Image (cartoon, rainbow, N blue to C red; front, side, top):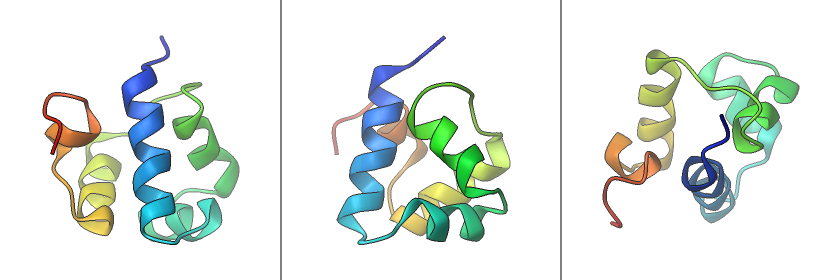
Amino acid sequence: MKNEIVCRRLKECRVACGLTQKEVAKDIGVSQPVYSRYENGVCECTYIQLAKLCDLFDVSADYILGRVDF
């Protein structure tokens, strides 16, 4: 099931950090097409990848998941 908030926040965070999908994918250990699927809501990342994304974007998992707005 596609989660619009997660998709939007992943892309917003990536763009705000000035990173390409390829750069993010490399940092979390997946290919660019796999990361693209995360941003498009085709599939979900693992907990470990979510933690890496939080560290990379300097945000909380609650933010990415849409549980908080900051």
